[in-house]
Image 1 (cartoon, rainbow over the protein chains, first blue to last red):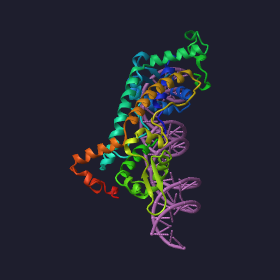
Image 2: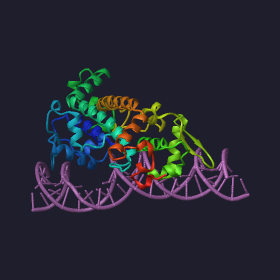
Image 3: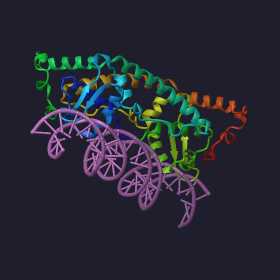
Image 4: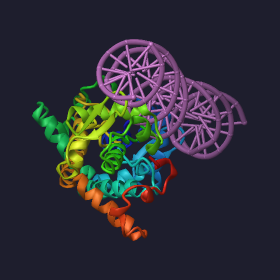
Length: 163
Length: 163
DNA sequence: TTTTCATGTAACTTTATATGTTACATGATT
DNA sequence: AATCATGTAACATATAAAGTTACATGAAAA
């Protein structure tokens, strides 16, 4: 299985959207992420349904944040992107007739469930505002102490991110 | 990504091997698992390297357990099958230049690391003997109270498991 | 009102990875 | 020497995520 990058990608996109008040097009977001605008629209559609972002068609259109960063947790974004499968390992078959396999499944499922609960709890404790603050710390550490005066271009170390 | 079933599959195989003192061929194990003998050999090779099983060529050959069930934990089997990736989600890129992506990766990795630690701890607490005991309970509950007198055929509810 | 820009979405293609298959070599037992 | 079983490389298939193409819809600008 390829690893799912929707949560990671959307968090990245949401934080970049917070840099500006203007609507950002799928085209620009796709350039930042090194992907295709259609992929952005496809995944952002889920965020829009949850009210995390808003979209506008036509000239000057694009995407805007629907809620302040401090109100959005990683868990909400995870749900908004469709709650993709968390684990890369699983049972060979659900509801097996074989009692041995039932016992094996129960043991693995129990451990996975605990891990999933912990993971979702952690995701629920982290807001986008915390990620933005961590970004600010990293930028300051890299020598951009006046970040608030230079909120955007100076923070682009990857050319593909230029807006 | 397809989900990895090597841990689940090998646990299943190991418990079935405990049913008998005789060597069990890859052919029989493959029939039980609904897979191919070469797949069995390929994955069992890892278990053999860790001493969890032994193999014998030629007539009467096949696979035998290398250690008592009580001494083997799920964590050991997981390691023996090559420590396959646990999570189906991940970062879009490791070592990104973008500080935003670095912050996102750090947050996700932190949560995943905690979940992984918990999962591995749980795997380390469960032995194959515990799974075998759970199997016995399930068999008894299904109306096989004299399981020890009828250790094998009566526990096969899936025809593909007949040895 | 026509052109342009941007989203919305279905259908299809590509890519990555786990699993399955074929073929043949090696070694042990009969 | 024939048979049985593992050992393993090479190749094929299946599945799911991501990427792409094509075209429709709606909004702003010319």
